[in-house]
Image 1: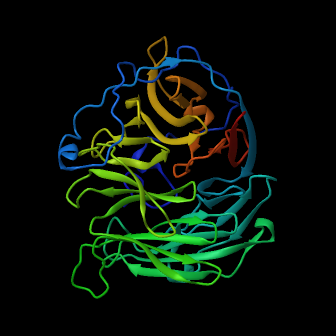
Image 2 (image 1 turned 180 degrees about the vertical axis):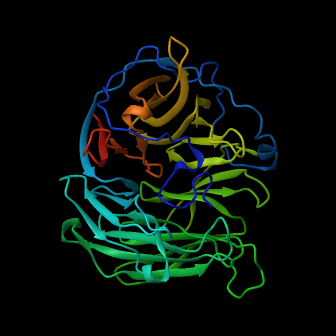
Length: 429
């Protein structure tokens, strides 16, 4: 499974998620007295190429980064409300791709495309290609021209090595109102190859599979392999192969970003940036996570790396860290799902705090960090019980000016119904 993420579009598996209520207006302002970033002395060791001694010392405690609290930078915001509840699963310059939250017993769900420029939306697939064979849509990505999705049959919890998966692609047509007939890219059973991680870059789809525990079937993969297919002409090639498994794969700035296990015995990983044209490793980062499991997707830009780890193996509590050439350390406890936008790192926090009367309540914040000035700020603060929960798309790569988040809520007012708010946030230059 993806480290800390699973492979469906839903990301509640390693994160506290409250029952959500009606969405309320949330002010775009700094909140004086809000919980700040971690305080202390910054460690100044840059990301380095991992080695045996480094990984053995990975468990040593990271120091907190010393920061000050400031007002947020000027931001512009555009909301696209949609009826129903939808999971954000893919993002491109133009489109956001969603799967429905109301699924069948075996997990099938519709696929919806939202044009982030016009707000036009359409359900482009009502169900899985293989719905009659009890397959369900469980993963989805998109570019400006293609959608790619995974269909799964079986129960991963009860029969983890007896599930079947298929990977499909379809071309976006009519300005996002429809898609072409699906094309089967790959398929396997989880006793031979585990479920794929995948990304779309332009007209090419990349998918990764790790070895499965069975070595007694023809076709069993050893280690990890990333393959690519040019969607217009169907050309398939192998981009990257290794003896060790890959925990996560995402796309950023037209390149593949993977977190790869140092060996196949523990949680320690090295984050690599891979050239999709030839498989060359362009850069490596060492998160020094030791025995701590990486939560969701590490993010990179230039020399900078930001990532979250699970505080305990079976916990949903996380710690967010950051490192570049001059700074390294803990950014914030309870932080998760960072995204690098322009000069900033935006991320989520969710924690229980007490009112003046001692009553506990959950508070969620969308926070920001300015590495150049060592400052932090709160962009949004909300109470999940009344305002719903804002979620940054966990796999978004670096963007010069924007990030996207969603809040899917159940209407508290009679007849209000469910709705999903898609919020596009842009840093004003």
